[in-house]
Image (cartoon, rainbow, N blue to C red):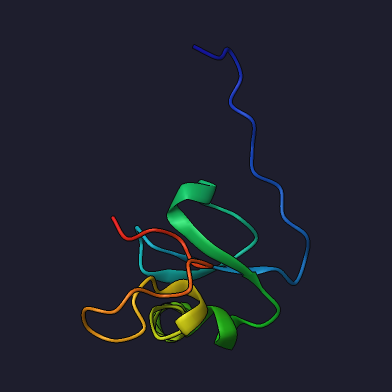
Amino acid sequence: MALFKKRQVGKPGEWYYCLVHKKVEEGPECPAKDRFGPYTTPEEAAHAMETAQERNLEWQNDPKWNDKTREGEEGDGTGPAAP
């Protein structure tokens, strides 16, 4: 166990979205595992969940990252294997 807890230090103007508290924070107040960011504005941080959802959908629909091009057909093998 560590004797001293290292305080997270952020730069002024860095904004994060805390997944635990469901709020925007300036600077990293919560551990990295519990936040998205950094973002340049509080508005961007407030939309972190929507941004993540959009990126996930883009990734899921990217043919380069899918093993199957259509149902039952094998892809070109350039993407990661399905679990």
